[in-house]
Length: 183
View 1 (tube, rainbow, N blue to C red):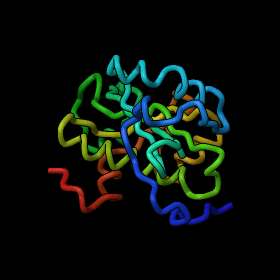
View 2 (cartoon, rainbow, N blue to C red):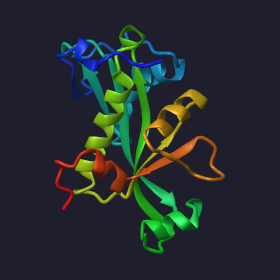
View 3 (cartoon, rainbow, N blue to C red):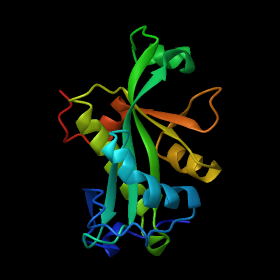
View 4 (cartoon, one colour):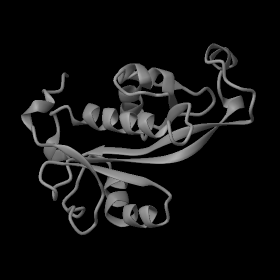
């Protein structure tokens, strides 16, 4: 099932979540836990600096989708040795990464390619920020098998022995955005 082009909603833009402007109560996706997070926990996590929450909005009020980013550390032992070698990673116990904690699209915007748009927005922001705070990969914990399949379509790699945890090397992300200077 192919998504329709994103151009159907031309005014969409990413913004940091603002509880005074963005209508969190109207947001609904296929996962109740993602709805509840946005409605009940997101602003607290922003205040505590646990997560950065970005919304995709057509009108400064409606939330078409959202994602969260946080700093993270990958246990080097969790990665396949051949991948560590291929990426020429240092022999540290923990390696810096960016956690894509949540990604959700409103049911009202289903079928418009917003999942991909949200993911690309998150990856681009992670890449840009990796120049300021080092990050060698984006890590995600897929909420279910459908989400896992979604991330795998974009090149995310399973972390062995960690069900539903996947990662995408920042080198791969950089190839998606050749116009971004990664220093």
